Image 1 (cartoon, rainbow, N blue to C red):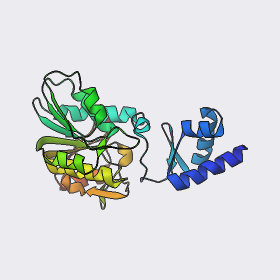
Image 2: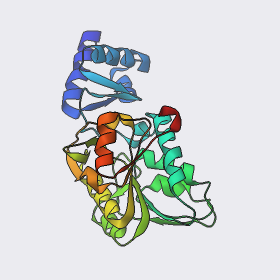
Image 3: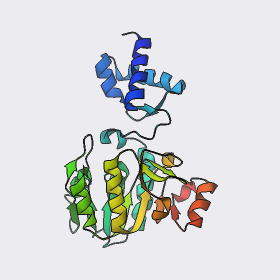
Length: 257
């Protein structure tokens, strides 16, 4: 296949699927991953695609649900910074609920310095991360395993979440917008996050700075339903004033202040 034909195929696939994965394209075309990355760079320069770790998404699209294995390795430094700040919020002996986001996995790793926590999650990977943690109580929601992910979703997972009342909820989302609130790319994840928000006294949104001013497909809640927003850097004066007016805490690493 000629390079121009390959690029058109990728463009058509982006329009249809909203995302492409480098390894999948390399296998399909029987070319190296470096060749695919060059194709994606050309499409990014044309304004068609936005490159991410492991692939690309359709430019300006927030309705993309990438495989968890790809999401976990994207924006790692940002997520680590968010995790470190979030970990400082949670005191010893707290009850904490976390969603199945890749950011939540970084947060739980930061929290492992605690001696005694109770954790409820729909993330199978978080459960595995904590399997050797002594003196912690860990509850998995159960439910239907999400395709392409390590999280349980569906009615049974939601029902399990609603049976708990916790001190803190830690969750992420695909986009945050002043007018449209918090949004995600699919109903299943949105319903889980709604249940988590309803189960906690203090709701903590852990979100990297690329998600601000983005709107995805499904509404989760209003921004006002969140108590604390943790991100990797100052989101700007408009957002800081917006949060202050609504008495929403805003935290980010001190070195970025």
